[in-house]
Amino acid sequence: MTGSGDDPGEPPLGSGSDAHGAGATLDAGWIDTDVREEFPQLRLVSVVQPTLAGRSPKELRDRLKLLSNRFTGAHAITMRRRPIPQAYRVFFRHIGLDPDATRTPIEAAALDRLWRGGFRAKGRLEAAVLIGLIETGVPVWALDDDRVDGPLGIRPAQAGERLGTGELASDLPEGRLVVADAARPVAVLFGDLAPSHAADRSTVRARIFSVQVAGVPSIHVEEALWTTVEALAL
Image 1: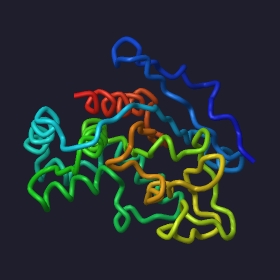
Image 2: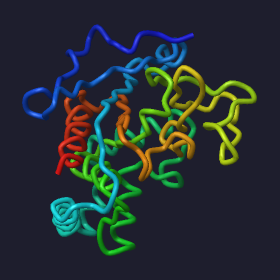
Image 3: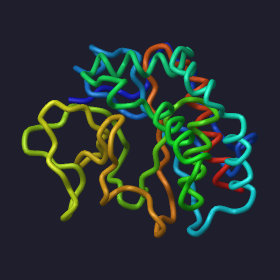
Image 4: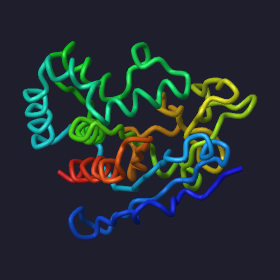
């Protein structure tokens, strides 16, 4: 069973028709009723945006370089104590994940930057998603909108379900929280995207989504999505 994605206590989701361009609108996802009862502040928010294939333009590469230069080792070490990264660490523990073993998205990006000497992305969309994450600390993912069946939501996986479709679809443990469309799981919550549904070089329209947890203000989640949309338009 699913509940409404809208929370009466939340302000209305923003539109991108002015500051963020081209009439883009944020959509609130649905949350399974039992999941909502356990995590009342859990939200999924998405936006559909046209995308272009190919290499990242110079503007995106320069922006990633600037972010790499600002993101020092000291920043990475102290980051987990900041409010937004800490909120995701707490949520990880609540759903049975050890954040010191399964890194939160921003911590994983920080470690990758230190290991590789800079933030790296393959293509325009991956760069835009990475920028949204780095600049806000809020995780962002992208699916191919043409492969998604209806609105996205969060629910437990059912017995025998698989992640996506096709030969690369993997088995899911019953009860694992997933992001799903009307037909099936398309991502593990804070985990892998289904290969059959993930945005790739052939994607014409991306379904960009983020997940809000307790302790993360809505404005930061919305800003993560708008930052990604704006970077994608460069």
